[in-house]
Length: 99
Image 1: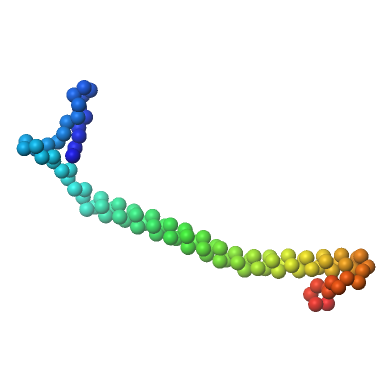
Image 2 (image 1 turned 180 degrees about the vertical axis):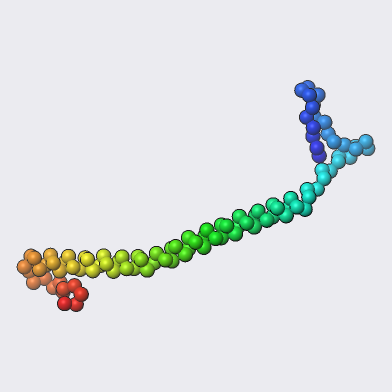
């Protein structure tokens, strides 16, 4: 149904045939539909690519986190050993790195 707005005060005008049937709007061209579906597929592919990149970065960070945790644990053990040694006590704290 097509409604045309004319001058002020005339009201809407309907696009009808003489026997009272509404005229259907022409169907949009196939190229327009193809463009719309192509854009939808392109957006979905871009979102999948961004998600894959985020997952890849997260997986790359796992070994970095493991190495950082190992360094933090070694620093903690080193400080505990030095603190026990400087206090002059015989705490049952073994030296770091198996020494």
